[in-house]
Length: 138
Image (cartoon, rainbow, N blue to C red; front, side, top):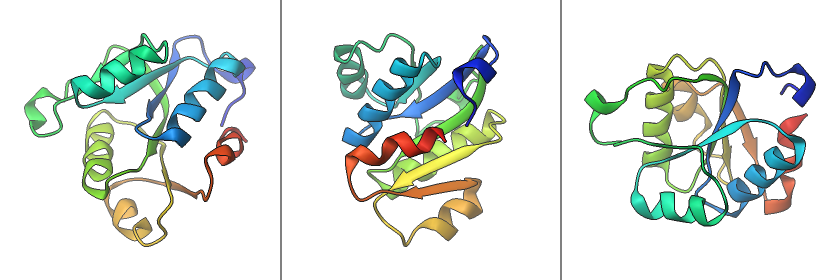
């Protein structure tokens, strides 16, 4: 991943952060001064992100492909923190629709790599603990 100095001011990281590791990653992006948007598919997730101080949120209806409108931002990288295989798969489909070239799935399971790859994810990280997110920025 690019360091802050290497990011164009018009590029953003897109993060789905439904778990502790994802939230820690958002805090890491903030501490490094990297611009990001958070991705969620429901009001509860949005409220949790807002409670963390996240104000750049993209909400998508994962059940209706007609609503997957490309945001008016340039997405440089996508990080999806898996809590559900089905939801993560849908987010991959959405991000591919948006033309995202780099989709990174972060998971605690090691059995789903080939399925995610077939959908379009091209990077995978297996984490055992939540404090391993710093290595994602290397």
